[in-house]
Length: 275
Image (cartoon, rainbow, N blue to C red; front, top):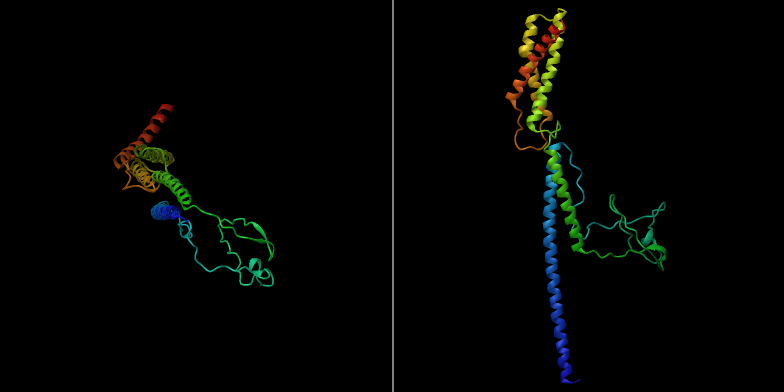
């Protein structure tokens, strides 16, 4: 072999060595990026879990049982291998029970809730129909991208849940002022119905004039006002709200203490008009 051939071979080996170093450096950089993306995704999922727990406690939903911990793609699953036994005699079955395959453990059992993969059937000397496991190549970058998309979807649904949790159960699409007016007016109208009942009772002698006047001027308006106050506090309060929502106490007091006597006056005018 001539000197030129030796030199060409040396150059080829040097190029292969440099290419190998570049490949190792690129693979190391890729692994670092994957680990950084995995850590970032894990922190994001942890924050989502805490936020969902807060939403669940705010709306009174019990927390679900904890699931299996999140494992990055390609991580090994710890735990002893499971051994399957044949029905009836308690002997080994499957690959562990095949003739001439002593010491071979059975395939791991699939836990409840996991997806059972279909194993291809291969013909082996140990016996026909023995399932042979086939390694499936998993790209960590693809798995991380899918997990990131699912995290984005979870963020979108979580934002929608927060918006719904900021609405009260009573008249959720109304403004706080309109809701308060409707509640106090409804309670005042109920008080007006009670006024008519007391007026009818007074007409048959069951209620005297002083009691009727006290209920019309103070008793029933106060009951209507506190009823509206309690309704707004119970069903007009969002599950998640910063501070105390307004209940418009002066407005409610004015509505109730005007609406109930006005109902009595309307009744008197109606009676006189019919006469």
